[in-house]
Length: 506
Image 1 (tube, rainbow, N blue to C red):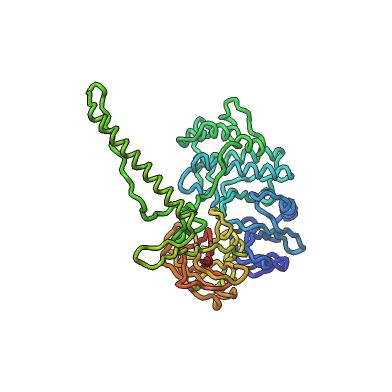
Image 2 (cartoon, rainbow, N blue to C red):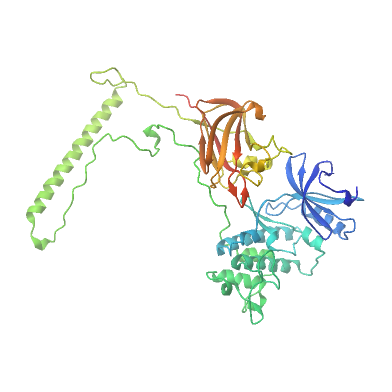
């Protein structure tokens, strides 16, 4: 197979199906592809027949495949055949540092946290004999799963043909430039990079972060200068490796995704007071307002008022003692007599107990797209919606309209309960963007025709409880989007958490 014959639909290694060209430059083409065995998207690089550094790239990719730090892009496969070479790696979705800086500089602590994570990841790469050499804002990605990824370790340098006598120093400087960019929204280079304007200069040198952006802490200004601005170090020693950058930033708070408010279990309609749940209860006793104490200076000689206050206080104390004694006596009778109390002039009243919904743990979850061309909707993220963590989530792909681009009637998340269960209600945590229309479908087979719609809500966001008019039964629970909310200029459905409840036993 010649590279010129590589086109959408081509299958590599009998499992990776090329779908769309993402970018193409200097004889290297980046594709979005599907791993047909594991049903997940992957990134694939292919190379033109005259690309001169194929051997170096494949060798670097094979070395990178042995890296285990989750913050580094995982390489799945690399092959160099007679007429075709390719590299298969993890498909990463999220916002690059360039994207994050589109609205201006980051909060200093967040910028430092991102670079600290990158420095630690690159330290592990260097320990394995790999380096980056081309750190740019596009290589640092805050993923949709709320984690950091450093793209291109080993591979980007091989593609560009870059070599150096001191890779540790070069990567330390690259990390310093990324920190400068995060703190200022500018790139410390002669030209703009990744959409960021070049950093301002003073007396022929780049301005320090504090000279560009107000509010940058002094220690972060110093770390940036030590790593990337030698003319501004003012006697400070240089940071000469990713490990030294990581050490200099070791005390900064690490970036965390914005938490999504959710409750692992909705409050039942009625709850036994002994369970300690703070709910509003009917008043069973009279609450007395505390007496108002008028404070008088002794020289005013208001002895009559003082005597009256003392008398009132004595009466209040006496009433409290009587009330406590009466309560204790009543409680003692209740404990000593197990019989059901009788109401004067009426029939015997038996206490009622409301059954509470019980959480049922799912077996698995996956993206469900039976109406789509590839019938796959981020299946690799399905488990993130049932792990109980508010920072992880499943999402649909982006669409050009709220009606899924008019491509299909719906898409969703299919939850396999492992066995047939009764479903009283399902609590779903969506994104905070309004506009979702979701259906709850339940059935005994993972097929759209077998899943019956039992609840539906329109124009919702955040925490949503889908409750059938009566308990439904089935092994499969489907959260089905028929309308998507706006997200990043397009439309996408997101599910942070799914909790399934079955009826309790009274």
